[in-house]
Length: 265
Image (cartoon, rainbow, N blue to C red; front, side, top):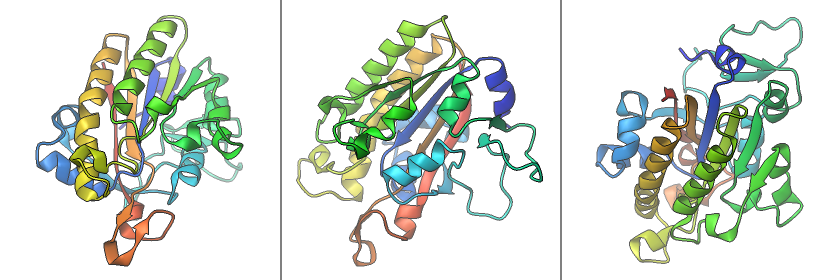
């Protein structure tokens, strides 16, 4: 069991990666088909957990994540939450959970000496619009440029390079909370199959591409200390499932997301 309270108390670095729009069935099939060998090597037991997201598109999902509500197992009994905002006095919190006395996780980690850094992907992290500034403003510093966004075929490579540069800059100075929103799995991703049509197949191809650079990122961070790693999708996407297209809807393809957490060093 991951004891996040102890991990944060000891100043362990944290990497939180969201694969934007990645469906659980796509992530699971890509793993089974050998398309993501680096993730297969990294994930606990070589598998993703199937969980259910608290939000059906990027903004509400990430606001929930940074408020303490990560994807839940599709079952009545839940493991201890990784982090939680200080609750009312009548509520009991499991001792493994990091309780932050702040309105969000980022402010809570700052109170424990962490530097919080965002490497954005999709435009909700771009700062280009008032709404696109909401999530980046939660962090001490936020990085985004067009080459990090899904239309760029090498987006994950650029994001991994940026993240490793940040890790180098703060190495040994203070604990880091690095957040990376992988945009490659968000539409458009048909270009990974040489088409303009997005599908589960092109999302799997996008994930196969991202696997190389996510693996390189984790290999690089392992030389820079001990890390708590959390990986999940914020939501899924529909590509004609039951006639639906897109996200922001109550459909199993949107609710069911991959999730994993482990210590990495």
